[in-house]
Length: 426
Image (cartoon, rainbow, N blue to C red):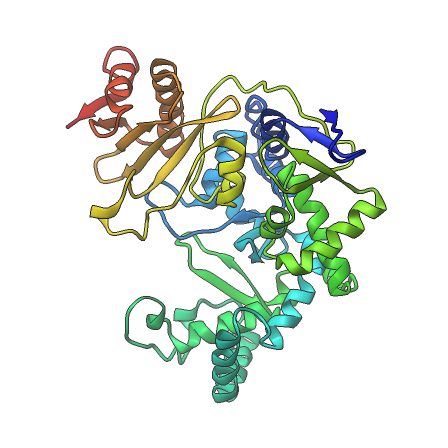
């Protein structure tokens, strides 16, 4: 890192230094830890604190992202331990952090201002606010009845309500009024929730889910809460622009900008200039790029926090990434559930993966090499990582389809006889 002449006193970072700051902040720079004796419980708690948020998503083509993100960083662990940590009295709780996210429970007071905005119907666009307000007003008695039922019966899913008021329609319109009522109360902070084994949300009074010591902490003013969340975002990102740091916990950039300026004034953050970015960036004071010590490649969930901000991903890695889950199949470029492959400090490939549980196989539907990446080395590294994923998911074989420019080399690296558990398909 150097101090550049164009902005006196501002540190300058190369792209590689910025990448290494990001990878260290995300726990992706070093070797996997040795397996613990508690199914990964302690390491999961530590990881959640260092990441700040782990996105939750329903897509289960390979495994749900809340399980994949820890696996990428700590290796094989018992997924039931994560479910336990996010239940009543646990170290994690679910809320709207970065989308639906698992958050360390000690962050609860920082999200109370967001809950207050939900209660005042001041989130989203003006049109969405109006719709939410109108629904709340039209269904006030029903909301009260749902809350009373939770009070009386204890933890409930939407389907377990005595009067769920199911609706017909497509996609979001299928949601029952009961589910909508529970979600309103959840966003308001009146209820808290956790996920059951089948991913359904289970709701209960916040006082019966969040530890009493956490609930007793005073709520912070919105500006102070934003400042603390942005400081945490800088720690979790390694380095980022105002927009990057704001996106981590879904704070509007116009609200984040003055808070970041205050953090710089306080000396908690420092402004830096990253090669090729063209905009000021910020990092935690005293942070330094760390040497990479991860000997293997790592597959990243499409919803991994390293690549949440697509523009930042392109600036850091030269990697243009778009999720194609909702793109009609004929229009997809790389596939349905495409996972970037991290090797060293570069994203070197994209693999479209599916856990075919009926046949007990991990299917590589397509594999594409990034420009400039070595074909043979990437294929070998991908084969090792795929086998690691296969074993963790309890699948018997890996089937490599001949689709994508990396597929021939990956098929050779994974051919039977070279690596147990591999095969190819057309």
